[in-house]
Amino acid sequence: MTDKSWFDKEVDKLKLDEVSFTTRSILERTKFLVREQDKRIQQLQDELDGRTWSPDKW
Amino acid sequence: MKTLVIIAHPKYDNSMTQAFLKSCQKDIDSVDLLVLDREYPNYDFDVKKEQKRLIKYERIIFQFPLYWYSAPAILKKYQDDVLTRNFTYKDEYGCLDGKELGIVTTLGEPIHHYHDGGDEAFTIDEIMKPYHALAHKAGMKFLPIFSISQFNYLTEHGKVKLLVRYRSYLTNSHLNSFKSEQLWYLEQLQLIREHISEDKKAGMDMLLDQIQSNYDKLDELNWELSMIKEKEDE
Image (cartoon, rainbow over all chains, first blue to last red; front, side, top):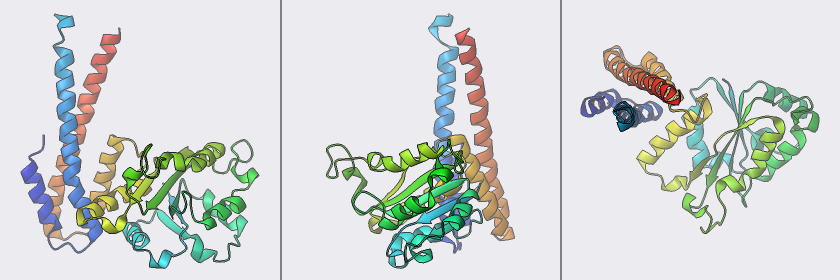
């Protein structure tokens, strides 16, 4: 899972002094990409736990 | 993958939205623009030249402002003249067979008006059905429609989001896949890395490593889950 505050700070450092709006935009949106990655990782881990510990298998 | 954006806009040079969209992709070598109103102000198309042009691209995008629930007239004339039966029908020469067709349309009204029961009564998907039918006839894959509503009201954050979505629409090879979206971001960041100063490269590498590591983790979890599901089916 991603340390969000660390990731966002690194993105903001890269954006600093960047003149290209395109580059700044892509960098900014990577914050949302990693949030979506983290959400999906959590969902998949929860599903795996649910299926592994299903009462059907007890 | 090469993408051709065919633009129909009678006031192209004065359009803020079109200027913004142009600036979003100007650095991408694999994307070309064809502004119909500039190239053919008299609607007199060079059919052979345009057919040859279409063949060179895998993804073709029609981009236009919505005029009376359709494209400006020049795009219809282009379709009528350039997309001849033999060239287009998948069961004739099928020159467009296997390519993709996308629509980028700009709206003056809020997008939530385009719904059953909304002010415009019909959805954008319904209004764009003729293009879907064209794609079907030509054997093309019809892409999800990209609509931009009320560009002039967009905040800075809205423009940031639009820029990235638009670039992805033009260049991401699998638009409906999160896996492909992640790979697309990695590719975009690698391109940025080539142009940033040396002192920023280490920071960029850390971001790339984090995204890649999350990507690998998702891949692994998906694999584990597919194995469990396979066993459950037995």
